[in-house]
Structure formats: C-alpha cells, structure tokens
Length: 259
Picture 1 (cartoon, one colour):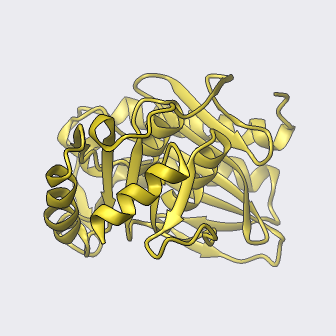
Picture 2 (cartoon, rainbow, N blue to C red; picture 1 turned 90 degrees about the horizontal axis):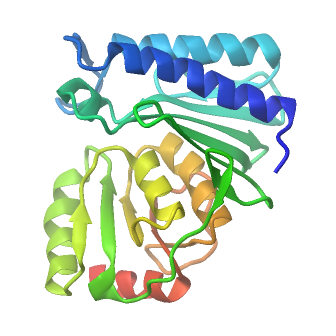
C-alpha cells in the first residue's frame, strides 16, 4: 500500500519519539503522579510528546491536537492528531520492554490512520481506513480461532476500573476455560497482537481514549470484530468500553461470559 506524505510524516514522528523512549529505557527516571499512584509520567513521556508535536505542527500547523500529556488544542480543523507518546509507562519505568508510541489521525469524528511503533522490536504497525493493517509494511490479519478454550484474552482497563476488571472479568473468563489472560499495561501493543493474529481478544473496560481511538482502526482493518458491552456493533470513535476479537461470534461468546 502506498503511503501519502502525511502518513509518512506520522510514522516518522512515531519513530523519532521511539528513539527517545529507547534511549531512556532502563535508566533511573523520576516519575510524576497524574491521577492515582499507578497513573504517572516520566520525562521520556514529555520529551517524546514534544518531539512528535514539533514534527506534526511544523508540517500541519492548522490541525487539532489531542495529546496524552499536553492536552487538547482546537484549531478549527477537520483533522485531529491523537497522540500517546509512551503507552505503557508503567512497564517502561519498571524496565519491562513492552511499551509503544502511538499516533492517530481523525477526520471529523472518524479515525482514518493509525500508527503504533514498538521501539524495542523496531516494529511499526499502521492501518489506513479501507486499506488494511500492516506490520513493517506487510499486511496483517487476525487469526481464525473462534473457541473460548483456545483464546488468549488481554485485559485492558482504566485506573478506576482496574480492580474490577481483574477480579470480576478475570475470574469469569478463567471459569469458562480461556487459554490465558494477559495483563500487559500497554493497550496499543495488545491491539496489535490481536490484529497480527497472536491473540484472540482484547477486553477494554474504560481505558484511556487515546489508545482506544488509535487501536480500534488497526483491529478492524485487520479483519477483527468490535462490539460494545451492550452488544452493539455501532461503536463511537472514542468509545473505550468494548470487546475486540477475531470474529463477531467470539465477541458474543466473550460478552455472554462477562455479563
């Protein structure tokens, strides 16, 4: 798939921010609390976001911004960049190599391009609406597994719903013999695992909207299915309570379990 200059710029910005994350990984860093003890950022988050904003604002100065650390900037444009400069900050700070840079582009209320970059493995995931999903420029699709007992489920939650998600949903899933439950603390990479056929489900219970906006496009363009907790297939672009799986039938099975 041919990329436009704008899409190449988004990928470039993700790579440049990834360099900052990779260089800072494994070093002692001060953390700055945001909302709860588990919700914090580091100077790497801040510097990576500055790098992304410098690149994007230089090339697209009139676009709106929705950024994890610096907030929202409305310029009256039909286009909005969605930015999470370091998804998986907890893992990053602990020295666990499972984190990513994530950037999306919305046109009005529709996500049209998403990019997730894993700087440790040098893996670039991206999706363009109507054109499929890719990893390192090769097309990816979800796998064809559709049974609960062969499904690996990644749990994703916000800080206020984390305990509920692990205790309530985790128990119900294990009681119904899922193969394995992951709790990785990096939603965008979990979405990419699903999109590339590595796992079968991501259950999102009220996580950050930045990751949700970016991740849903990668999943659907890879052939995945997304439904809400009410069973609806009509999911808003910023909806952050949903079940994403390899197929609609599996989504319905997971929903039945967690209800």
